[in-house]
Image (cartoon, rainbow, N blue to C red; front, side, top):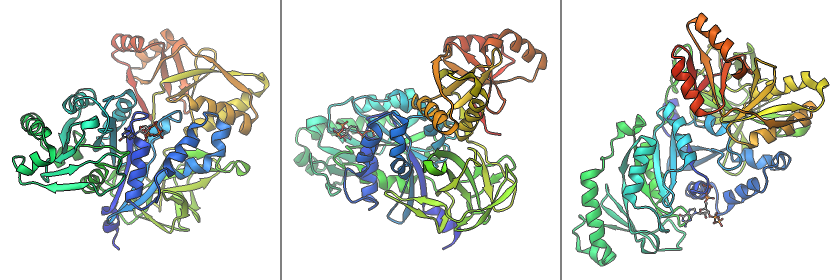
Amino acid sequence: MSLSTEIEKRRTFGIISHPDAGKTTLTEKLLMFGGAIQMAGAVKARKASRHATSDWMKIEQERGISVASSVMKFNYRNYEINLLDTPGHQDFSEDTYRVLTAVDSAMMVIDSANGVEPQTEKLMEICRMRNTPIVTFINKLDREGLEPLDILSEIEEKLQIECAPMSWPIGMGKAFKGVYNLYKKQLNLFSAGADTSDFETVQISDLNDPRVDELLGSQADELRDDIELLEGAADPFDLEYFLAGSQTPVFFGSAINNFGVRELLDAFVELSPAPGPRQAVERMVHPDETDFSGVCFKIQANMDPAHRDRIAFFRICSGKFSKGMSVRHHRIGKDIKIPNATIFMAQDRAHVEAAYAGDIIGIHNHGTIKIGDTFTSKEKLKFTGIPNFAPELFRRVRLKDPMRRKQLHKGLIQLSEEGAVQVFKTLLGGDYILGAVGVLQFDVTVARLKSEYKVEADYVAADFQVARWITCDDDKKMTEFRRLFEANLAEDGDGFLAYLAPSAWKLNYTQEQWPDIIFHKTREHI
Ligand code: G4P
């Protein structure tokens, strides 16, 4: 099969949602449609085991599970789908953000009772950085929720994306009758408790068809009114807008009842983009170029504690990866042979024989791979777009045995290179401040410092709430800023200067006062 045929049939995406909106349930249904799992409950069981604890040691015991669920590959129709897990509960972390830099599109799940929630807003912000196309699923229509039109305006307002409803719900909660497919002019009828993909579908000529009244009774007129209103108010679907990330097609349903999921998946594979070109420092790289290239976007440590093993997850950006091939690891300038890369199926892992752009492969290593590393068959390339994200939580590290300071430094630098946590060293006093986007990252760091570097450390509160990397073209201004803000300045693990602010307000104020200083929310690994 030609390279472009392989690429055309691939879809690589992640799900963005707030905890409890139904991501796990939806994932499970999607995998079932793909025949990747036979039984409901398989993904849920994993989630339960992951949630049983926020303790790193126990997480480690579950590590096989969490790795297997990092990427779930399945087939649907003639598409090969890579679903990348976006950790969302206690395991919400910078990885969640980075995963979104490796996808070509995203599915957004919204709980119809809660509307747009904070974690969705955060994840959406990451998607917007790359204008990632987003398909929206409004879930839990079998429960009483917000008015559909209100949900759409909330999405438009809070997430700054235009909504194009593809289907429209008929009632909700106990009165939920199903959805009307606006484009196919079909009524998809719902019956509670039937966990099936074979809900009744009725083709109608238009909404005045008498069958609408027969089937929906008094709700028929409500639907007609809704659609009339919608036709005046809502935007029609526009593929170009969608692909540019400025419009999202919206579907309604109930994941737990498997209602609306097939329509969602069908539209998703048809509308969402195949793997596209990716930017490298040197040039744009196209997926159908014959030479292999890939970039590391995530590292998962301690797969096997006996070997201090790590798996580096690579997104293939171009060409074909074949088992046993040699690739150039450009940062260290060495060719390495990769005999046993792993590809992640929904329920187990397998050795990769061949993989193409959009696929994710796992490469074992012992700490020689950093996030952002690029591998190619020969050409020197460095992919961009996998940045560090400004941390949102901070802790000051307290070393219990001052004699172990060197080991602490080494451990923190290595852990930051792996993306487990971000480390900042204050200009004043040289204290280590750790930055994260999920609290579990702090627990993991302390546990790993102890087990891998024999360093006993804990945390005290740090008086910072926001961080921004800073640069300035005017050396004089920068020197002045450094002098005045020394107590709030720190260098990150790669030596880049960051301003740590005690509050968002203070950051805004400082930004206003110092227009020559550029405050960056993200920083590329360079
Ligand atoms: P998450 O991964 O986004 O955190 O959400 P998850 O799928 O675990 O779903 C969160 C809760 O919402 C679960 O209930 C799940 O059963 C429920 N849920 C998911 N989809 C629907 C839906 O379409 N309708 C309704 N009514 N509920 C839905 P739970 O009580 O937390 O767990 P469980 O007891 O069902 O396992």
